Structure formats: C-alpha cells, structure tokens
Image 1 (cartoon, rainbow, N blue to C red):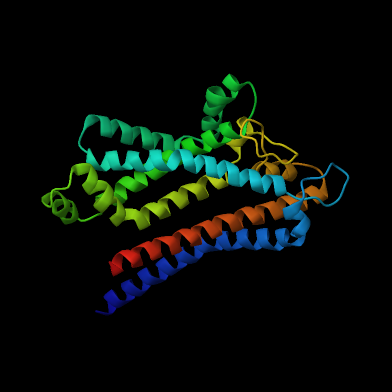
Image 2 (cartoon, one colour):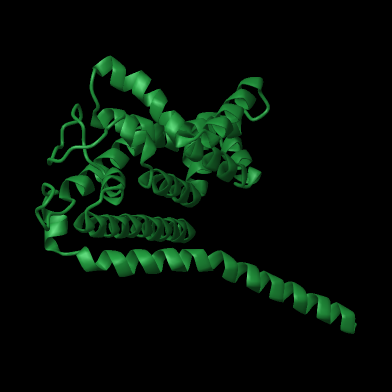
Length: 280
C-alpha cells in the first residue's frame, strides 16, 4: 500500500514538472515580447505608416490593416471549403475517395509553409504578373483548409449517432439532418477549430514573402502588394537600425495580442452557442 502511494505521488509530481516545463518557454516568450514591445506602443504606432530610414517614430497602421485583410480573405476562402470537406469526410468515411481526401489533407497540413508560398506564387502571382493581396489570402487559405476539414470531421464524429437517427426517423433527408442537427451540435467545437486555424496563419511570414510581399504605404487594393505585421516584423528584425528593432518588438506584441483576443473570442462564442442550445 505504501509503495502504491509513493508511485502515485511520483507520477503526480512528474506530471506537475512536465506542466511547468511546458509553460516556462511560453512565459519567457510572453515576458520578452511584452517587456520589449510595450516601450514602442503609442498612438503613432497604430495610426501612422512606417517612416523612411533615419526618421524616428512611425508605426504599422498599414501592416495591421493588411494582416486583417489577408486573414479575412483566407477565412472567406477556407471556412466554407474546410467545413464542407469535413462534412464529406465524416458522412462518407468508408469510401476510397474520402480516404484519399483525408490523406491529402493530412499531407497538406504537414507541408512547410514556404512550399505553400511557392505554390501560390506559381498559381497566382505569375499569372497576374505581380504580388497582390489576393495571392497572400490564397496562400493562407490553402493552409487553413486542411486544419478546418480535419477538425470538423473529428467533431462531427463525436456527435451522438442517436441525433442522426432521430432526424432521419422524423423524415428529414440526409443533407437536412446533417446541416440542421449534426453540424449545429458540433458548432462550438467547429468555431474553436476555425479560430485555431486563424491563429496558425496569423503568424506566417514565408508564404507572404512569395505572394503579397510588402508595401510601405497604406493600401486596401486586392490586386496590389500589401503589408502585414509578420513581414514587417521580419523586415525590421533583420535590419541594423535600433529604432526598427523596437518597432519589431511592438509588432510582435500586437500580433500576440490579436491571437489571444481571437482565442478568447472563440471560447466565449463557443460557450455562448452551447449555452443557447442548452436552453432550447
């Protein structure tokens, strides 16, 4: 009995140590980003564009707007395709085609982002003849699709089969049962999966270097190059200018904040959807 207690205590202690070791890198990253980035955060950072070399100040207003546009385009492309793909994978799980789609999604999910950037460059940039916001959104959307598809599939498979049988027994067609019963039941998890995919692409730099590239000026055109926080941080971080280094830390802090806000919003939205469904 004493030995079992000792083994149990050792196991709990090992788990606690593992948790601490997992949190320490995150804590250090957040500490350095916040401590370094907060020094350069001011109104100019959010309201002004970058200034030429040698001029102090400036900001990343164009990069912030560009990041929101790129992620919005990527979501508009990837969310419907990813969710519908996940529905197909769960509904036709045993077919050869679904197995091929699942394998392709898993493979695409593991492809380095720079390879996806090269693909988007060949598929969009070369035919257009120049970098563009559309090309950047396309590259990020391609990265989002497999994440959303596989997440949606796994969540739909967790929905109790009795819900499907009940809908079919009441005379609903297969499509109606899926989109009015099965998908709504898994909606909180699907929302979380979509936001996780957004968080994944929000920090990507390599695909954007091949597609949307960069723009020192404010732009909302879909057919012109556009700035983004990640590319701007990369450009500033490798520069020899101390002021640009401070701007890079501030950009990193803004990016981390955006990801945290999206994650919290997704959790709140998922909890609200679940609560509303529980009241019905």
